[in-house]
Amino acid sequence: MPCHLVRTVETVARAAPREDGRIRPDLRLRLLAEQQHALVARWQLERLRIGGNTIDGWLERQRLRRVHRGVYSVAGRLDEDARRRWLAAVLLAGPGSALSHTDGVALHRGATPDASRRVHVTTIRPSVGGHPGVHVHASRRLGAEDLTVVDGIPVTTLARCVYDGAAVTARKDLVKLLNDALADGALTDTDLDAIARRRRGLRGKGPARFASARAEIARLGVQLTRSDAEQRLLAICDEHGLPRPTMNHRADGYEIDAAYVDLRVGIEIDSFGYHLDRESFVRDRRKLRALQRAGWTMLPFAAVDLQRRGAQVAAEIDSALDDARGASPRRS
Image 1 (cartoon, helix red, strand yellow):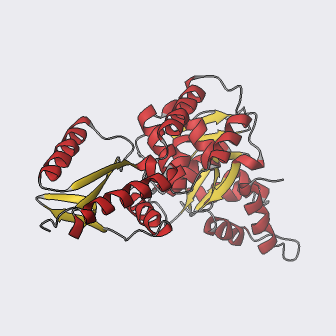
Image 2 (image 1 turned 30 degrees about the vertical axis):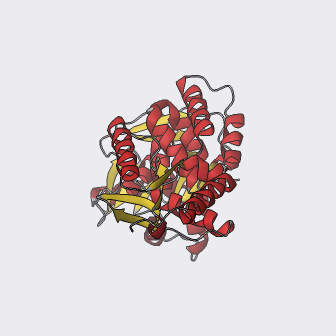
Image 3 (image 1 turned 135 degrees about the horizontal axis):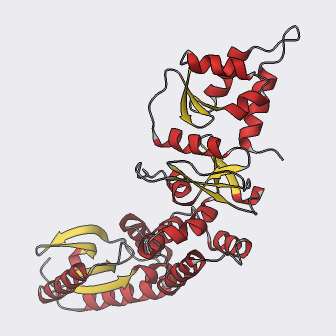
């Protein structure tokens, strides 16, 4: 099955067939550029039966401007946003290539890449050389199950990007990346199991770091964002017939994550991010003590409790509410 870049050439050829036995080079150039962020590769133009003299003439007249060796920008588009940099690097590597590693992650996750770093591309063509600004990784395995297209750019799947990029990603950043992707559903444990099987035997520090990051997430559970944790808490209350608390209630100089105001029962959810720093940890402990002195019953839960122990969380909230109702009236 031809790769995306080759299929694009075939689409253009069908859209601009020969007329009276002759091709229309200008039309084919325009149609190709329209589908590729105003970028074209010499090898694509040659597959479209556009001769070298015609290509060289376009270069001389600056209708085409060189981006990489054999990769050109069509006149009028000289800006260099992230997507054009990424696609230009893939075009340089040629057919059977895809954006990968940390750049692939950035494309999948809508992140802004560091423009000062080389673009990572993976290819099945081992003869492809390097180029300033592009890091080409040769791979013997780059099947359809590891490839996709995002915004017109061939890219390895998010799972493959994360796995391959583990070698050049700090462990803390890798844990956060995996956690966030699992939390929002961009990745599943099944995806991660599958890529680990397909990449089994790969050497280097990447596989070990990937396995270590997964083990930490398995131990602590996927950590939720603040909004996700709040929604999960409300869902637990609904599922178990508990009244919904007031979210982010301010009382006695502090903001309480969730509060039953009349009964002065508060809920704090530890760790909205993947790790709390030491200063935040100390500050939260002081907050709990201060609220307890002010007459609040405080229930601290870890985010993982909301995910794995919903029934137990509901039981503890229900018990605290019953105790508060049975106690003497308190000032609200």
